[in-house]
Image (cartoon, rainbow, N blue to C red):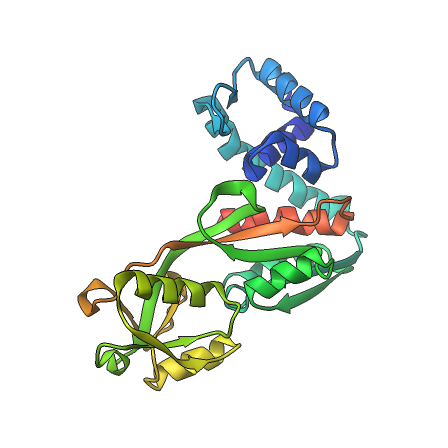
Length: 284
């Protein structure tokens, strides 16, 4: 028995997108073809992979095992093809990403892709998530990374999740008094909405003390003691401190990063970068 990589790729796409319809859109196949491929894969393996008696997609134990090992097989296959069969892959990919994610997790991922495909021209735009959403719908980006509330796979493919935390400078001077001074990006901003919503739900008074469109500007304001901000936990730089319930600061929900690709027949370089980002970040 041989495991067909095309069937395996379809199975992984269903899991990553959360359904047969969205997997068909990603793979440029009909939904009936996707369903037939999963049936064929299950028949070849002699195992049920996807439970079909629930409203939400659920994997069986065998499906979980195949997903874990199958992703690694696809990554190795794609890497081999990129080195042997696709050195001439060329074109342009327009990627939109939030600035903080672009400065922390993305550079090495994009560098590896560029080494594998030197003739693909990457055009990366850093913006606030709400603006990226509008630009994506208007056709200005081929791929976008968007911050979102934890919500499953209904909007793009989740590639990152981590807790958000309140951050102040090393001395905590911005916490003096009852009113919380906030350092945030201008509207519209997902993290600004999170900060204001959490404080209002906790009944703590607040004010916008400093607004900056750049992460560097916000961190400089926090370091100077002008206010507090929120960041993903693993992005808190040295010289800053995380604050929480002991300082009467409310809990914050986790943040997710979702990768979205335009649905209508994306060109091969776009598809390859999409798959590369998903696989690279899932392995991080």
